[in-house]
Amino acid sequence: MSTTKKATLTAVAVGLGLVALSACGSGSDSGGGSGKGSKDVTLVSHSSFNVSKDVLKEFEKSSGYKVRILKDGDAGQAVNKAILTKGNPQGDVFFGVDNTLLSRALDNGLFQPYEAKDADQVLPEYRLAKGERRVTPVDSGDICVNYDKKYFADKKLAPPQTFADLVKPAYKDLLVTENASTSSPGLGFVLGTAAKYGDDGWQGYWKKLKDNGVKVVDGWDQAYNQEFSGSAGGRKAKGDRPLVVSYASSPPVEVLYAKPRPKAAPTGVATGTCFRQVEYAGLLSNAKNAKGGKALLDFLSGKRFQDDMPLQMFVNPVRKGAQVPELFRKYGVEVDEPGTMDPKKIADNREPWVKSWTSLVLK
Image 1 (spheres, rainbow, N blue to C red):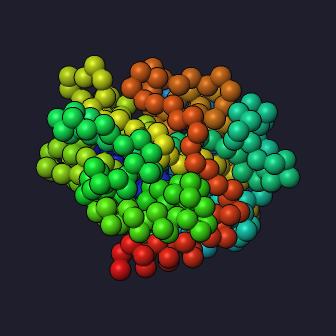
Image 2 (cartoon, rainbow, N blue to C red):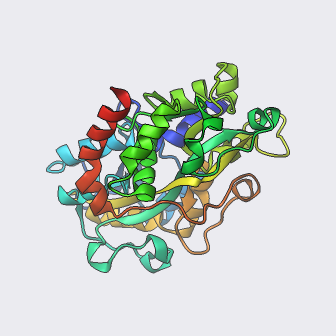
């Protein structure tokens, strides 16, 4: 798999490209849940869900269930479709609703209560209140500005580290970001500015960012693999923006697929610009194979899957004691204080904020 394609996979976990419904796995049903008593169980997810074949086979062998996976486009698209079909769901478990969309899913009754077997092994910072455990935390990742190390070294200019840095004249016309109305990384970046500057301050910040030449494109793939001068894809496409909104896990990906592997990642992370994203899984309301779905949720929060997940989807595990790969430790960064926001506040403000951002930045 090419660097570009794999890196795209990373971000499609939350990006908003259009991908047709696809199915994989060895289940034979043609849609919908798998039926009470069935030995088939169906997982509905976004297009970048991935798991090692041997890990999935271990679960199938130990549980007796055959897993069918339906990949239903980007995260936002998949959540919306799951809500529209909740009366007759496409599967038994949904994975991939994140904290920017969680309230929408819960308010629409997408999930039924189930607490995964090892819920007490989830790190405290990711746990939901006990009465809200209709979903299980599965992974986390940080949306952050990445920078092209070579560009800044050549210019003898320190790369920006904070939101405040991005509006300084030294960084004029250097940043590319995604459209907040069509891209989850773009939305996460806007939420990060709202978390930093508050309900009454983020618009003023964006006015400054616009005046400082921020470029907006439709999605992550275009921003990272075409516009960003620091990525393998961006260099090939002759991208000329040395700052891009991407992920804290993007530098390790640049190393993983480089030949030969560099001693250091060619890109860095502005750790003062990060917004934390958490992805959840839940047992779908009206699931036809609820018993199998519960077993599958136990698997997603279990140590075997959590250990496997980082190099499959380039996200961080949320389970105590789960292994973080050396690639992450050596080439990635730990974001100590990412921006966060209560899912209820996101739900209450997402639509008006996106409209306001669109009017302010794109018109």
